[in-house]
Image (cartoon, rainbow, N blue to C red; front, top):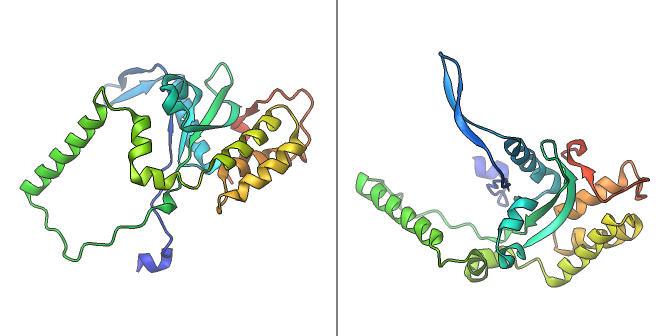
Length: 232
């Protein structure tokens, strides 16, 4: 069936982007049809960032505004991967990623006996989900601690070693400074260091290679136009 055609390594992967900013919520339309909508350049910025997850090959992309609003301990969980110009933003912004390897998780086996849902079971499930959500929203809960204590998150972050982070940061700094030959050498290492392809390393190398052939253009300021980037 479908599982045989997709293969055993197929996973459902949802890519998302997080941005922070103002928006106006209101009803937009005519006398024939009215829809609730959010109006703001920040909405288009968020949509662009969501599409950019495919450019960088990541699951969760964060804007500079989100990282600045996070606690220092939570912000430290992210990795700075680029500085870009996005339509709708008046200034360049840093892009960060939350490194998570979802392929490291094992797939739970299907239940031997199919569960027949009743109204009572659905109510209990909703109660459980609501209690889990409320627990995470509690003032005393720190997301950075959850990252350290949750076994599944720890497993997804296990590949991303301090050595990898150190080498990538050096490559990224050389990329910003226009030392693209050095950046190429360092990012070539991080591209395959994890045992799988690191999307941000590959994305930066693709940008430096075509059409620049790893020579920073004249007047390079460490910022690129994300609207000109192509989804691989």
